[in-house]
Length: 139
Image (cartoon, rainbow, N blue to C red; front, side, top):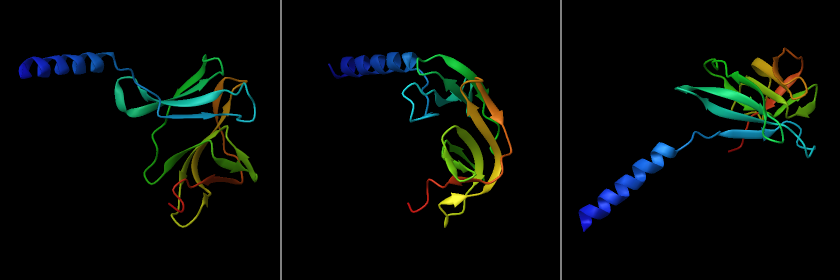
C-alpha cells in the first residue's frame, strides 16, 4: 500500500511539473490612474534562465511590445516604474540604477527607458534630473 501511494504521488508530481507554465515575476501598471492602463510584465526569457523579457501588455491582454532585457551592469539593479523625472514620479519607466543603502532616492542611472503604450515601444532615453526609489531603503 505504501509503494502504491508513493508511486501515485510521484506520478501526480511529474504530471504537474510537465504542465507547469512559466510565470511573470514583476507586473506593474504604466498609468495606474487610468482604468485602461497598459502594464509591463517581466518574464523569464524562453530557453535562458539567466535572461528576462519585458512585455508591454494592453489592458485587454494583447502584447503590444516585447524586448529582451539588456544585461544589467555589475553593481546596478533594475528599477521598475518607480523613478522621478524632473521631480515628477513616473511609472512608465525602467532604469538600471546603483543605490546607496543610506539613501531613499538614487541618481546613479546607467540606462533608462520610457514605456510608451501609444507607440507600442520601450524607448531608450537619457533624460536629465532622474532619481529612482531605493526599494530596499529602511528595510
